[in-house]
Length: 305
Image (cartoon, rainbow, N blue to C red; front, side, top):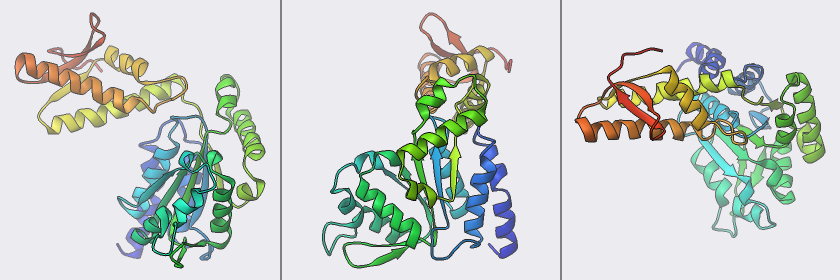
């Protein structure tokens, strides 16, 4: 991809995210801009391309947005994710950087394989203080030395840190303006995370809770994705309005947000196909609710959505 094509590709990042992430339009321009500044090498070459804190309730698209941006900017399979709830004791740094001179650690192995890409560290607030010290070094100096003695730089990586800090306040402020929710969340971030860590981040992005209309949009996206995949297997399905509302009710959780939705959609649609194959041998029609068993079935109805 030459320079002109590269610029055009990056220019389309925000639209790419808007087409796939619902309910977070307020922050997608900032997220896209951070990735693009880094990808264009406009940032300090001695530091990571970008460093982002993505904070808000579970299931609002934090990890998905970062993953989508990484894939669009760097290509597929360029995202490495670390669950920091597994790095809560003093030995956590050794897991990341290596136990001995022959061990580069989990982080070192990722950097060996991928000199560019996205590194996503989930639930930053759960990490041991020594792990936070490591991140301070990475954000400030842009490099790290692993147990083998090799020094890696982060000049080709975007770093993302997710957190649910402030999520409880967000859920309680159901009828508040988002500006107030954002201020309350960032205030809680400042009280929970070390100020020197927060100060070194390029962006703090607060994700909003998902209202009913947004939930339907996300559900429709998941249904479209799964029906297109099933259509490729030879199963032609439409969805009734009532079936969509059924999936919204089944797939969204007050605390987990949209996280269970994809599995719910996949399970319900695949089970409907399976049952239709077992009973008729072919599958084509509209998915409707079978009230007697509380699941979706394939009917001969035509599309009504």
